[in-house]
Amino acid sequence: MEQRDQWATKLGLILAMAGNAIGLGNFWRFPYQLASNGGGAFMIPYFIALFFLGIPVMWIEWTTGRYGGKYGHGTIGPMFYLMARESVKPKTALIFGIIGGMLAFSVASLLSSYYYQVIGWSAAYTYYSLTGAYFGKDTVQFFLDYVANTKAVIFFWGLTMVLLGIAVGQGVSKGIERWVKVMMPLLYVFAILLVIRALTLGSPVKPEWSSIKGLEYIWKPDFQTLSKHFFKISLAAAGQIFFTLSLGMGIIHNYASYLGPEDDVALSGLATVSLNEFAEVVLGGSLAIPIAFAYLGPEQAIKGGVGLAYMALPNVFANMPAGQIFGAMWFLLLWFAGFTSAIATYNYLVAMLEEDIHIERKIGTWVVWIFLFILGLPVALDSTLAYLSELDMWVGSYFLVLLGLFDVIVAVWLFKPDNFWEELHKGAYIKVPEWFKPIITYIAPLFMIILLGGNTYDYWKNGAFSVSKYYVTEVLKYDYTPEIISLITRARIVIFIILIIGAIEAY
Ligand code: PHE
Ligand code: NA
Image (cartoon, rainbow, N blue to C red; front, side):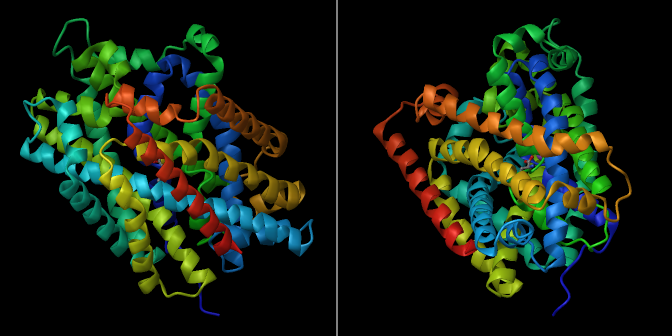
């Protein structure tokens, strides 16, 4: 058998995993989740979820991935099948393989179909910052005009996708690893420069507004707000942990499959969590919200919602000294963050073709390109963003958590907790304390079941169309028309078709 591609260097591997995890989730999603869930109230369940959910699932996914890689597999279907076999008949193991493979394929495809769009917006806004295109304009209207400008949207999204295709086509060690080695250090440099800028803004607009107030809003524990909206805030916090750490997507497994069988996973998994959390709570937390606090005031900053990064902040850059440079830096930062995550979902799909149906990477890359282009087109053409919101709702609140739950069921329960523990410690640089075992085996899955139940209850209570309706009417201020409902319906049909294809593929 041909030698499977592997990470060339330890540094390359760590940067690739950091690039995978650190994404738009850290700089765009985290701030608006924080602001729409009470700031200091959000951080309490956030850290609890990090410890009881994030770290355990991260270890499970690294371990599962390396195990699959040993058998030449980088996708969930075969991985789950191989592990489940330890305690059930091959036929039953196959069912777990199919469910897992189907979910992971759906996440990689559907997530990419809208996430790549947002990366495309970042490319466009880098350009518009440099040219000062939105300066002196109503930046909310500018954004709405941009997403309605089909040609521009497709151009910047397509450009991003071509670069992604080139990177992934070169393979893991010669492509992905080389690209992240350039992009990740730049990402940190940009973020640190921007944080310094953000925290030294002073009170440019009103004496009582400052970025330091924004930091206080985040870091002052607010138990009162938390107890008032306990369930809602906790669900949002746990959901953010999942999203930001790239859990339940199959892409941590996939990257870990390019390890050698004796390479450490325990410390490396922890390193991924630490690098992502530094980029999230320290860097991400010190940017969008504090900057908005200084220029727009607390009220506007908190209300900014999903639009904070693309609608509110441009208005800030337009009024800031050297705003063209800082604006470009902010959007290029978003672009790098998104790009190095997008590579991972793209590679997952290419690995599937490569290993499961033996299509050469060079060809598979462009087959996947066309597939993702077709899947992304309805998102690109929808200026209401209802289609995008609907996809995000399903993928973000259900598929990720469901796949995470199957992670535990297969890699810990069926593979057997003792085997898992041994596998986790093979070649490990650290020893995980024994008392962490029950957290991995019982607490993490319980957490996920509550999360799934809570999301379902929310969905049911507020009506099946509520999430997208909220985006459309409250955030974007459009009317809620029959066209939008039909868009949402179309999104659901696409989700359904993708699930079916995923099941067939895994089979
Ligand atoms: N962890 C990523 C983030 O924070 C999530 C992601 C990964 C999204 C890969 C898309 C593709 O943004
Ligand atoms: Na992240």
